[in-house]
Image (tube, rainbow, N blue to C red; front, side, top):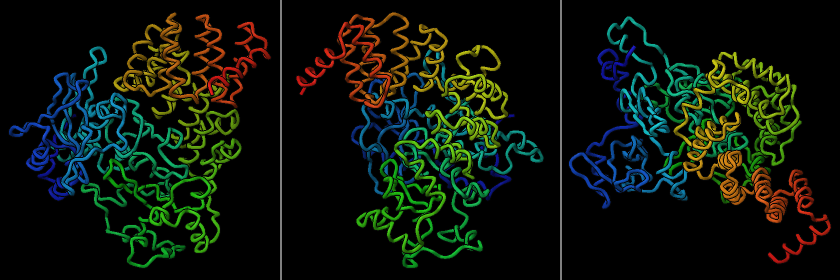
Length: 618
């Protein structure tokens, strides 16, 4: 179809074009202008010649130790330089400019270790794969795996008209021809306004979100608090998906003007425009009328600060729950302002105003906040919560348990796509049965790619990689090979198919790109083991037990390697350390008993030696 460019739209749509031109979307990425050059001129470490800016960088970004600043990303409250490195890489520089304070500052606190995925020189700050697709229009990442280089292209710098409406060359040539997306909605906004995993390279505006991405949620690391509040930098989308607003059918454009992104009304009028008309609505601020505490957003959209300066409103629209804060340490909006009073004071105050907390959202959050998951409570939540997002969350947390099989089987047929994805992920983690295999095979025919990818992941050990059935899995892996997680998963797939030699180069890359990825290190060690490289495996596993002593697999695998190397005493010492680190894991004492039998030690004698070693250590 072809792109026309935003300039081609302005003649027929001048009002929309004017709104867009002043927006953060239009200016989300831009070349250097007078304002940016003036900011760089304040730095003593850069060279500014005309419109060209060169800045010192580590040699891992550019071998010459200096790189050109090709653009900046972001507008207000900060923007960051984009520096052109070797092999087509463009990295987001670790320092940013605050246009209000007129100062440079480091966006990280604390500073990540140089060489880690999180450091600005690492893959986590790769413009090519992490930023461009949402800050530019019609981006083609252009990763070539054989040469490990990028040839990234885009149709327009910044988020242009066609980033949301689709390719419009035909419409520009003949205006009676409709644009692909006449009115962008949630599926158009979510790809860029959510923390998500990409299933393919690139997407067309208006595609179903779950055809191209899977949102990351509560079960995917420390991204959210148990009540859904933002914890890490997750943007707005998934928080909104879990809200009652989304469940009621509210969309982004109900609150935001699509071309300027400004809110449709100012202040509390935005919320009251709908809520004041509800039959049960009553004013409930309990704060002075004109105070900050009386604003709707202060309680229901609290801010979290990212990159030191960027305060963003939580789009989960949660109800402040200081009682949950007391019980589980979850932050609440009350003590966000009244930190000196504490959560217990806030809980007492809220109960005095509104009565005891009996909301279903409180009960749900208590279940999700439990340090020891309550299998029965999670199963009930997965079966009965009225909100599909939270049913999906509970299903994710059931993946490590043995119960809830009936609920998982029913959820695999749920009308909601995300529920089906999470159900198949949980079933894939279970010991394989004929029923689970049949459910996964049915998932291979699901209309949503996200479900098909998860089904293929569950069946990957038996899938022919060249078969049509494997296409969703193969496409997902190839789309992410320039990131450590993608390289790790590709290596794991080869390893599971018994081809350690093909797995090892991917796992070498994954561990080099993200040294903190323990799963990649374990796979790397297992690949070395299968290739008979026991010394290399031992070194990798020793590092695993140092970095992640909470993983029993590391201790067990290290002891196995030591036994194969004839280091029986070292193996028992390893398992003893593992048992101390994980006293409740039954696999370690079992392996320990086997180790001292193989070492010719009676249990009593071994225990005496163990006690002597511990005494010597202290």
